[in-house]
Image (tube, rainbow, N blue to C red; front, side, top):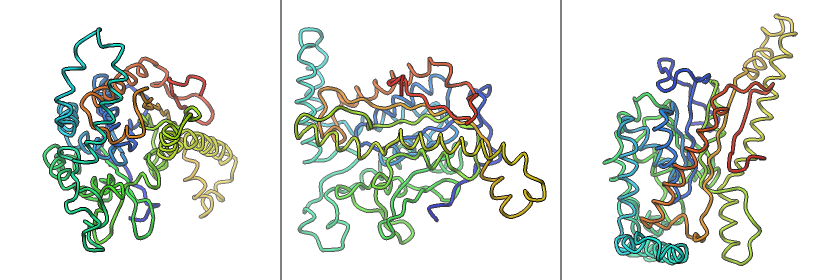
Length: 398
C-alpha cells in the first residue's frame, strides 16, 4: 500500500457506545514499548468499564498486539483475553518464586521498591537468556552460526510462539469483519517507508501483527506479499498522525496511550542516560505532533472561513476543489495517557517480563484512565476556533 493512502471508514458502521457524545468516532491509539504494554491493557479495562468502546484501534509493536486482541474479540471478552495474554508471557519460574515475597504486607513495604528493582533486573536477564513464554525464545544455534541471509542469521530470537498465541487469542474473522476499524504500522525494509496495514485495505492475519512488532535485531523481519517488514517504531512509535490525518475525516475523540514519556529529568549517570535516550527515541515526540495537529486544525478552520467569500465558479475549479477538501472542518479531542516510570525501573523496563511489574503497569494504566475520565470536559465538543483540544492531566499546565 502506498504510504500516503488512507483508509475510509465503513459507511455502514454506527457508533455503538455512548451515542450522546458529540463525536463520530472514538479512537484508541497504542504506542510500542514491550513489556510496558500492560499499561495499555489497564487503560482499556477502564474505558470498557465506562462503556467507551473504540470505533477504531491502531497500534505499533506491543500496541499492535494489544490492539489485535481488542479488535479480535467480542466486547465482553476483551479484558479477559488481554489478561490471558499478559499472564501467559509473564508465566516464568522467577515470577512464581517472587510472588509470595511481595504479598506479605507492611513488614517488607519499606524494602519493596529496592527488592522490586532487583527482581526487575533478574527478570530482564531471564528474558534475554530464555525469552518469554508464548512470545519469543532465543535462537539455537545463535545467529552467528547460521547461514548468511537466513532469518536465523538476522535476529537473536524466534517469535513463532507469538503467532500461535495470536491465533489462540484473536478471532481474525471478527477483526477483519467486525464493527471496529483496525490499523497497525510497520516499516518496509527495502524502501524504508512507513506502511500501515488496515482492515479497509488489507485482510489482516497474524503476520501483520508480527511485522509491526518485529524490532531488530532481536526479532526477525516478517515477509508479507514478497516484502519484508520491521517494527513500525523504527520510524514512528505512535499511530496518532495516521488516525487524525485520514482522507475521510470525522469528529474524533482519541485516547493516545504512550508508554514512553517525552518529558524527563537530566540524567545523573550512564544508566539514566540510557533510560532517557530510550524515552526520547520512542516517545516519538507526541507532544510536538499534537502541537502540529493543532496548527493544522487552525489552518483548516481559517481556510473554511475564507472559502465562504470565494465565488462559486472559483470553488468549482480543480484548485478550488482541492482547497475545499482540505478545509473540511472537524473537531478533535485528544486525551493523552502516558506511563510514568517507577523508581525501581531501569533501562531494561521494556523487556522485563515479571508478573509483579506487569500487574503494576496494568494498575497504573487503569488508575490513570479512570482519573482522566472524571474530567467531563474531554467529552465536550471543543468550542475554540481551531476545533482542537489536547488533555494530559498528569501535566495540567502542558
